[in-house]
Amino acid sequence: MNGVLGEILKAIKTDRGIQLLLVMLVLCTPVIAFFALNSDIHLGDEPTQFLLAREMYSTKARPLTVPLIDVNPEGRFINDAEMLWHRELTFIWSLTGGPSQTTAQLYQIFYYVLLVTACFFVGRRLYDNSTGLLCALLAASMPLVTSHSIM
Image (cartoon, rainbow, N blue to C red):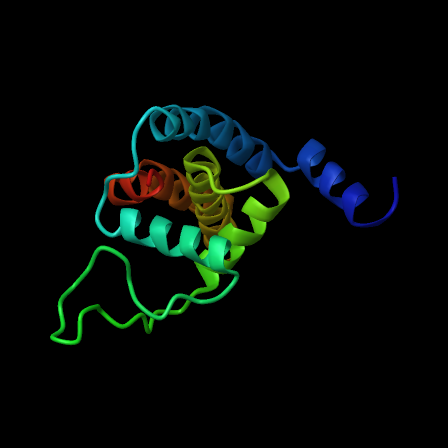
């Protein structure tokens, strides 16, 4: 196999650090997925963000106000947040057949995997393989990261 895929497969076969990272992700990600897929959207502002994304999906436009929050005298809280997360989620929903809490949870888990992987490569690039693995392990097991990987 030539090209990028060939290089990735070669790195997986020969690089012990990448092999250990994959083992860590294979062990941690199903645990996060189990709890995410068996819970309702409940932490912090996640219900609001889910509703914003669902409104974007249904109206095909950026919502001007935040649903469920009425804090100003004119009626609603003005939505001035960056909508990248929402746009990506609505795109995924358009591919998967519509708004779904399960899809939103899996989308959130994707960012967990991306964060753990990025921590590994940054630690390895700055120091060495062991530091990269330690960074990935800390990110994978940090309570704040794991709790926010579940919507």
